[in-house]
Structure formats: structure tokens, C-alpha cells
Image (tube, rainbow, N blue to C red; front, side):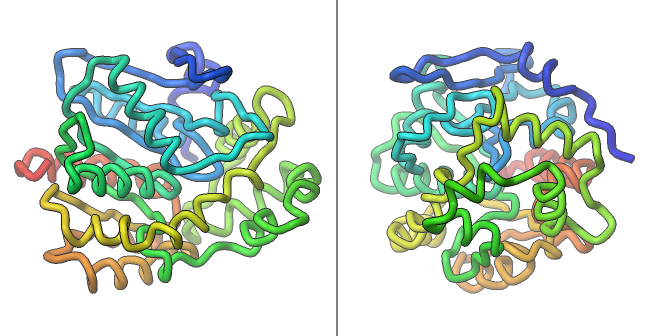
Length: 294
């Protein structure tokens, strides 16, 4: 059984907080400050702890991650209009605070849209940092190839605020497990940790509020998908093809539109390759980097 190498409270203690308006944004900055920085960006509805298994696999690098506003250990205001562009600005603010000028990104799910926004800004000479490469893990890069689960559709409806408060750990486990591979389901230790983070600091659930990104992807389709097709920055897609949301069908769509698409399909793996197949994901990324592409 997979056992998280770093418990949730240890993850919290080893991080810091960035002040943003009246909110606090959790982040981690680990490793040698003189080594190359890799920024790990998380998905919905989880947080930076998704990368707990990968963290020490990249011990030779400076590793940076954060919990976006509304997720994990960061503030979770319910009366806030969330947006991908705001989350992008949060990331850039953190990088400026840390005096980082060049980054390599690993982005999953929700965060692939943040990475696409960065690619679009780079194309338009609107970025004050150097984006060196992007690795995408399962995510809705192309709106037409994104298949939201029923629970996401319901949470994004008028009944979402009620439904999110009725959610139990059992119902979360049942729904969450469906996006994993058949032999790589989350175990109880992982569910306990993720459920704690979803509710932190105590039933602070706002999963319904965070689904703004689905509409934003449609509204920004030309900008974000266009960035994939036009960028000269090295891109790699690593995809668990059993994922019902953005699995093999997403890779098919990606390969049709991205010139010389660099893709890796992981058989038997679902929506969370960084948890389900962390050794493989680390090996693929490190091998790609050693090959000079990132």
C-alpha cells in the first residue's frame, strides 16, 4: 500500500504563507536555492499535497509549490469571485517574492489552465519571467475533450452550495476513487489526508465555488488552446489514460492540434498519475530534463 512519506501536518509545518489582500496563500520552497527551480501546480479539488510522493524524487532541484486561493491550507473565502487569471497573478507574485526569474512547470488538472495562461502571456511578451518548459499531467487542455463528472456538474449548478455541505468522507471517497485507475485507487491514508485538506480549517468547503475554471476554459479557448499550438517552449503531456475526465481521449485531441506533440500514455493509470504512478512520472520527467528538453 502507498503510504504518504510526509503527513499533512508536516507538509504544513515545512511551508510558509504569502499575504494576498486579506488572505493567506500557503507555499513551499524546498531544496538548494542555487539549483534549478521546478514549480509544481495542483489540480481541483485538492492542493499541493498531491505532489507529496514526487517531492523527494526531485531533491536535486529547488522545488516550489503553492495552494491556490480557495484550496488546501490557503484561505477559502466563499464570497470571492475566483478566476484562473487571478491564480496566475498569485503564482507570479510568489515567484517575485522568491526572486525567481526562470521556471520549469509541472501542472495538473486545474493548473494546466494556469500554465496555458502563462504560455499565452509569453507569446504576447507579457511575462516578466522566463518560462523554460511545461509538463502537463491529466487536465482539460482542450475544452471539447474535457468530460466533467456528474458531481462536478451538480456542484456547478444552483444546488452546488447545498450539495457541498452535505458531502461526507464516504461520498467523497466514492466519487474521488472513480477517476483513478482500476488497480490504483486511493487508500484510506490518502483519503483521510485529502478529506482533511478539503475541509481545512474546519468544514471550510467551497468546491462548488472553484468550478469557475470550466466556463473560463470555454471563454478563453482561442487564447489557451492557441498558446499550445503556437508556443516554442518545450511541452510534454503525461497522461493516465484510464481517467474518465481527461484520459486517453484528451491525448488523442492534443496530438491532433499540437505540432510534434510529445506525449506519454500511462496504461492502467487514472486522473492522478503523480499519486498513482509517481515513480514512473518522476523517471519520465527527469529523463526528459536530462535529454536537454527541459
